[in-house]
Length: 245
Ligand code: ADP
Ligand code: MG
Image (cartoon, rainbow, N blue to C red; front, side, top):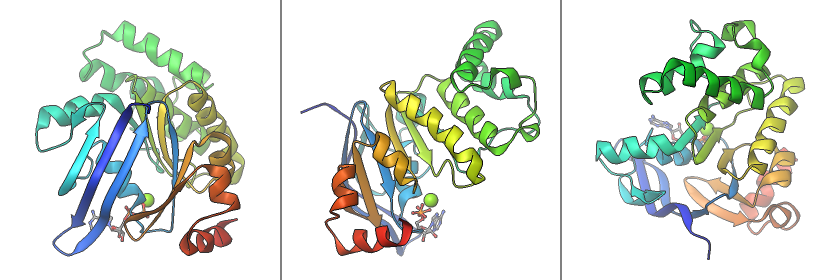
């Protein structure tokens, strides 16, 4: 069996005292695996992936990322965050910094990289998402699709082993979705471990090793894409698919 890079063991999480948002999550992600997570709004998809870089804390169970168990230990959290890049629906770029400065900020200040090296690395990543010619612009001078590609390049500047995407194309106009998905597909082909919350089922079919369907805080189904789409196991996944396809 391939080694897991992410392991959830009976993970439970509540918001406040009463709202049980993640229920007995068991999940093993192999190194290099591509996982697509789908499910109705409010089912806990964002919460699940945000636990992986400790943007959210779980209260019960174990969550181990590349050999490091997440806990209150700040060192463990820092260590995990170095391994995990994240891309959000709303890009989250710094509007007052140029594209280039958005990319060099964290490598210089957190990673202690000299400016020259940070710039070199940033330009490489901008090439990779085909937007190097926009390096001197400010985020709001770019289209949504370009901004999201900058956000992907920024995450890649920290050389993550794992990339998390939370509905990366949901805020984009339809004509820009493809340019972002194309970049993600290329990235997937390069062997990085990827977890992506998305309802882009074409993307799921193209890259996912496994599709996870969540509902009400539970993983209801976890199947290879052809099974999930052609022969979903549960009533709830069938119902969900009938609404989005
Ligand atoms: P999804 O990404 O599947 O739409 P989320 O993980 O964002 O679901 O949210 C799951 C549930 O938890 C929703 O009902 C949401 O309203 C609730 N929730 C999300 N974040 C918080 C929070 N910080 N505090 C309290 N409730 C939250
Ligand atoms: Mg969400």
